[in-house]
Image (cartoon, rainbow, N blue to C red):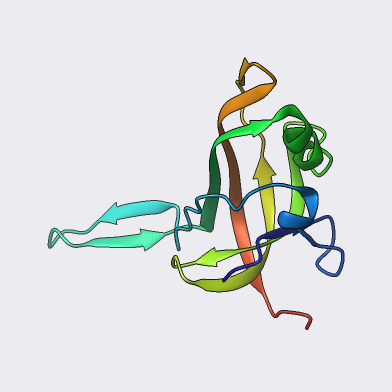
Length: 124
């Protein structure tokens, strides 16, 4: 089981569970761009990226995440699922979603995007 985590430093990462936030549906991609080759094959280029998705979060849960990204974007450290099954730690740029749909104290369809993922050796 992967203990999803975030922090402003690698050593300072805290698990989402400790913040009262459920695990997201991850969306790790090893590269950000597809490149069509002359022989019709496709190769990947660019930085790795990830997206964490929730059907909804409460306003309190969202505020806990917002502490790591007070603006439109921020540099953060995350532990996430790489290739859907292996835990990995990264330095990344977090992009906060532009629009929020708020209903009854919840925010629907929350997606946090992470780009420019740089894989790090775990500290522990």
